[in-house]
Image (cartoon, rainbow, N blue to C red; front, side, top):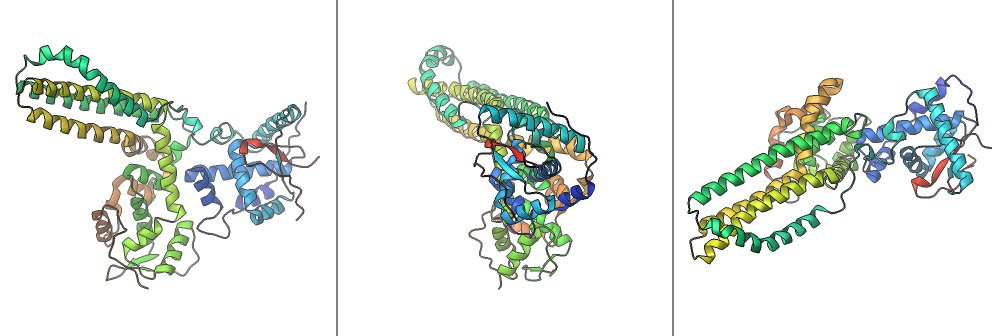
Amino acid sequence: MYTLTLNRMNTPLWTSILAFDFDAPLSEYGFTTRLSKENYWTRNFTDKAILEYKKFMYLAATSDLMVSPSEMVDVVWHQHLIFTQSYADFCNLLGKQIQHVPSTHNRADFIKFQQAKERTTKLYHQEFGEQPKDIWEYADMYAPLELPKADLKLRTVIIISILLSIVLIAPLYVLLRPVYITIANPYFMYGYAVMAAVSFILLKLYNGIRLKEMVYSFPDFSFVHHLHPYEMIYLKTGKLEQVIHSSLNDFLRKDTVSIQSNNTLALNTDKPPESIEELCLIETFRQLGTPYYPVLLRNLRLKPIYSNVENAMEAFKKYVVKSVPFGKLFYLNLGVLLMVFELGAIRLLTGLEREKPVTLIFMALLVVIFSIVVFLRRLTREIATTTLPSFYEANVLPFRKELKNPEWSYFIVGQAMLAPAFVPLVNRVERTGGDLSGSSDSGSSSDSGGSSCGSSCSSCGGCGGGGD
């Protein structure tokens, strides 16, 4: 067994580590942006993982024995190793060349790395307190949500259900025909319309309850409770344009950008950018001159700092939709709604067999089919567009100081937060349905002591903090 000597924190070193900027010099696709993009991480989770990586490297620099990263920290470490100059500068700051040691998965290495992991936990507690569970105890960002993946894709389930419905038509026809021939129109149509409407309403209410239970079950430390306002704006609206509206509105409010009399936009600053968003804005204006807003918007959509928002949130929605709990909810909705359709379809077959007028029931079935498709599509988006935004407004934002942030205000009240002069430009974009491709607007004019490391994060055992 090993013993740990309780040392007081090296405050100057930790302060320097904390101040080290992995994104210097600022670029559109720097360390943080690339880390987020390649792992589909949210913005705050990325920042948190980088902070924990800094803490780990502090422990590696101040320990004479091996320490071992978590899988999330190791992802950051792998990314940093690619940025060779930044990593060299960071190790110079640490005063030690930190070696990335891969695991060979033999028994001796297993024991060594297990001891390193236990040592890391104790050192971390000594220096920083409790380890954040989402970074140190789970293999990926989604694991704390505890949503196991369903065995079947929704598309497969839909196909199977439709085929099963076709098979059931014959026995249901035999069963229901004696009843249907005793019910004359318009009474059947009235009853069928009421039954269909009640089915949709009850399912809507039930879905809201179950999705709310799902969101409330997510632990407080999970990334879902710590989303950036841009990410919530995207979830609520499903449009990346709304995120850029909010961002540019902030630049208008700060007078970084102004709207000209001919509805073009102009850049008002020659100061160095303070954020990646501002850097992207400045670089875009340098390329376009004084563009119309649709042209500027089309170019900003391609910037990773914005497209990362869409990528991360779409990955989150897919993760939920592919989960077992959501799958069960979707199966229930699909089964009920297909039964509603079946009951109408059998009425149609009965009418055709008896040579009765079937126009009304045929039109009703078309409406039912259309409603089922729209209803199920909305169900796959409801947790993003309704459930989670409502949860944030009721349970998250009231306890956050950053509620006064204009981006959070935009999330809550939408385009009412826009600068008056900006509203006509946004409305013009919204009238096109977000399709900017056809817009007619145009703009004017040291010693490396490190060992090799495998590509799989799980292959990392730890680092030789102080050498042998």
